[in-house]
Image (cartoon, rainbow, N blue to C red):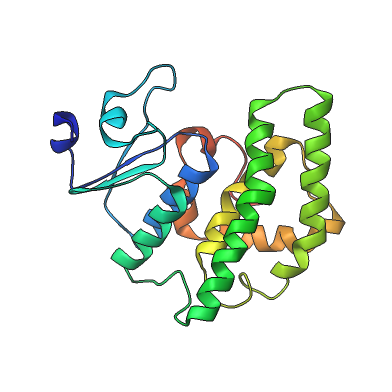
Length: 212
């Protein structure tokens, strides 16, 4: 571990300012009230600490004393187990498995599209991706119809995985319409959580208002 990292606080998160995966890790930290130094490496150059810590030099990367984790979902579950209150996953194995599958689907079906949207601008391909994401969200919004959160009353890692995507919809050019009323109400409940505002980077904070 590099000397710079060893001089940091006991927990450090390397994060991008505009990254869905990084945002959800910051939201877990905020929900748990965990004290953590957040470092935003310069995107124009390779950060030496990251090269020392991760074989991929990627973010999010979490350093907790001698432990280094560099996969977003692994970091989420580690933080939930390391800081068990409030819990963000159900207790029983079957429910935990269902929640993990839900997160996997969100990552594969929506995060991948969103990441492509952030990399594209003003192209027919981007327009097609926007439509694909919009249609998919409309089709599945019934899953978020049982308030206040995903399939129940407890805020969870599934909701935390949805939050960064919902926050960016307007930036992607996806408008809230009467057809997405259920999803909008769900998003509003998340955005009104005090921890959500604390999770935003400076760049994310300029994307939209916390209230609709």
